[in-house]
Image (cartoon, rainbow, N blue to C red):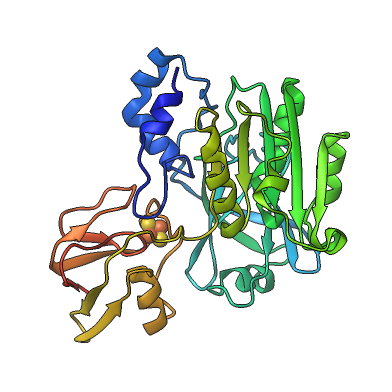
Amino acid sequence: MADPLWRSRPTDLYGRRDRDRFGTVTWAVGGVFTLITAGSRWKPDMVAPVRRTIDAVITKREMVTPDVVALTFAEPQGGLLPEWTPGAHIDVRLPSGHVRQYSLCGEPGRRTDYRIAVRRIADGGGGSIEMHEAFHEGDTLTFEGPRNGFHLGTCEDDVLFVIGGIGVTPILPMMRKARARGIGWRAIYAGRSREHMPLLDEVLAVGEGRVDVWADDEQGRFATAEDLLAGAGPRTAVYVCGPTPMLESVRIARDAHADAPLHYERFSAAPIIDGAPFELELARSGKVLSVPADRSALAVMLDEDPTTPYSCQQGFCGTCKVGVLAGEVERHGRTAEADDEMLVCVSRSRGERIVLDI
Ligand code: FES
């Protein structure tokens, strides 16, 4: 069975056991033969990455909660958009030039149009605010993809979906797919109030009694991992998407059942575990920045220059890649880096200082 393989994969500096977005794929590529011969229950619907850039026209813009906008967009001439499977996301190019990733949350596989939903985060990197303010019906939205690193397994028949707020976006199509397959599944959807749970009406409609709702204002407290996992048996496959604290608590609690699959997707950088501090020298300006043990080089660079390019913050998209002039890179990325390159969102310096060509 594949379970010992899951367990054998140590966590990295960022606490990842390669079961999150793209880690699963990266690991699976290397271990695909082992997986097949091991008879794994992890047999995802694979969609090859699509690197083309597509211009779409926004056909519908709606506020689905006070702070979440849903955008529906289609091919301008009415053609079909690329194939996709539940869990897939696209890379949206914002007018500012920034790139941000959003999960597709429409009907699974629907190609006549796509839908995404975006929570406005006032103290985020500005991407969500731009998404809210820059796009209206009739506007052009440019994206790459879709690609998928958060697949719904095809052989799991006992599934619990754990949803936190905007984490509903990749999970909702999975729920629809699970219903269509007729497998056994349940879901718990947690949020601060029903008013602030995007697409809750659709989740409940798909669930037909299989969905528990945890509204903090009704319960008088946040949901604990125990609350969220109450519907999971020791072999239940758990899919979780939501805020980092919720995701981490579920991940840690689920380690008690390491024999069962756990699939999760992050929307932000993973916490840094056992990192070492180092210095970043920016060669062109001569500035030297101190990177503390618990922060990424990217985070420190953003403090210095908020326009520093980034997207996934998890080492797979390559947006933050910069040249290295001196020093040795401790690599934690999941996309190719040349010897003289560094993904500053996850990679660090092996020595006290690294010199970047910026
Ligand atoms: S921001 Fe995507 S690899 Fe660094």
